[in-house]
Length: 322
Ligand SMILES: C[S@@+](CC[C@H](N)C(=O)[O-])C[C@H]1O[C@@H](n2cnc3c(N)ncnc32)[C@H](O)[C@@H]1O
Image (cartoon, rainbow, N blue to C red; front, top):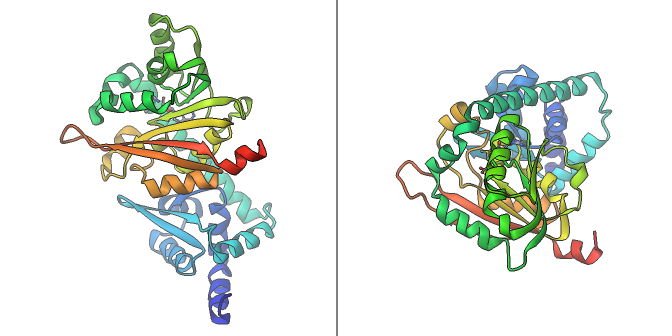
């Protein structure tokens, strides 16, 4: 139980219109201070002051990443639960909140278009670009090993790009689908699969935010160098997790936290890597568990550490047969 003065502090933190708007926006996922300033049209120091009050009261948590800071609702504590209650009881169609949501949606659309334009220009050279930062051979050997002893029935490779995972794992699944939102990347993937004679995998144009057709269908889901293009990688994990069968497995390969800020501007990255702690939180929020993680230090000076996380549905989910 909390002391009365703590509850007053908590209520004061949530009890202000700008902070209420920030909380309402955070129900859509993790957001950066930059996102908030663009949506609310208020200065960065002002927004930061509001966010600090919310963080001090334990309503939100802060995660610093390079020059940016990200915030999310703290769902673990009573203060987070109280914020959730407040938000659930505010009319979502109130003009201000609706406008904020619309601005967030158009901000994300602009960011998606920028990323799509970037992938359209690099599609032909992606396979060479990919290996600039990582030691492919060691990571790929570990990915094959992480698929487990038995061959998977259905593999879903999300953000398949040029289809490298479909090719690498060709002997590890019976039927594969590679999904990507870039036509240009998929054109390269199609040609690659044809050339390799892989006819048990197809590629499809689509968005990871819209995976309804694959719900509960996949034995193996792969997200290889994709999550750092998400503003909130946790939502990517959630979308992917919903595609898993109860006995399924998810392989996530991405960068460990780094500080190469230029990757945001030059290569459309949204996040500068991700930590084991973040991955565990995102997994937990999607009823998944991280069953193993391995990291691969760079083999060259300008390289980045790459991590391979293996996630599986929580045991109790298996027992429920969900
Ligand atoms: C860096 S490439 C990685 C491609 C491939 N997985 C690999 O490692 O070679 C990231 C790919 O994710 C795709 N992508 C990013 N966000 C996506 C989304 N929301 N839905 C579908 N594809 C997405 C991009 O179009 C791009 O082809």
